Image (tube, rainbow, N blue to C red; front, side, top):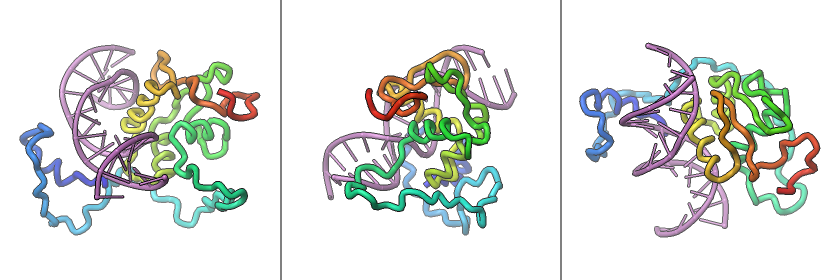
Length: 163
DNA sequence: CGCCTATTTCCTGGTT
DNA sequence: AAACCAGGAAATAGGC
């Protein structure tokens, strides 16, 4: 849920996260709606058919289906397909990449997660969490990140796993 | 149901 | 001044 619009209106005076404000019976808004921002609602009849892995094949198909953020970014980098200039390699060998269009970058992630309220601020926070786990490493320069030791599958000559 | 992980959401404050 | 970056906290969502 990402509709705190009512909150904003109510918290005009105090902006302290305390005060248990669990009383929000205000249903004055018939369609609180999600946080519609960019009214770009193309997809409707667009052929977004992923058309691959139709769940099955070898039995163990339950290990993961959620696609982690870093994998999503890696796949975006690896396929000039969708990635409309949202993110680009800075140095493929090093594993550094740069977010060119932060808005679209967040847009794409939002689509993937079916979250209309995604934005770069929140996406970048999730990315920052990766520094601690070693999936990403910090590098200087705005909008630039680097794959860490725990990330795999992004090298040009990487058969797959292999630390 | 509870625990756990991977984000997601929010926020304060600093930097470019 | 608008966009970013840094993290801490707390809330969620899905899996097990």
